[in-house]
Image (cartoon, rainbow, N blue to C red; front, side, top):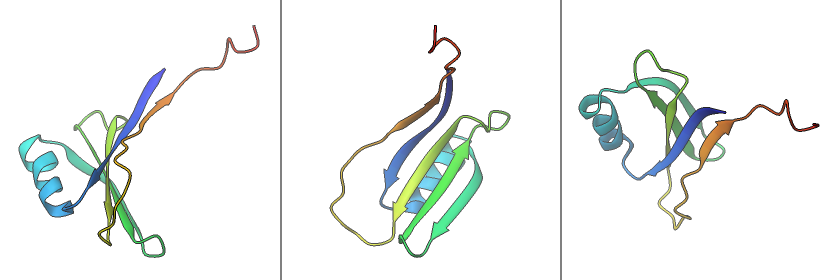
Length: 82
């Protein structure tokens, strides 16, 4: 099993990036801006461990949302048929 990422919903993207990058020392490794869905995803990770990411999810429009933070794992299915 391999850890992939954890999603954290943020309400202030710049303040969140300041915390994760400037205070914790993580680096931004990918950014996705989705105009149709009106959200931005920013992936940050520790230098040298870019496979283990924290996904910062920022919704452009303030709204009531479910406060969920999924964790992604990759698992091997080699024994699934045994």
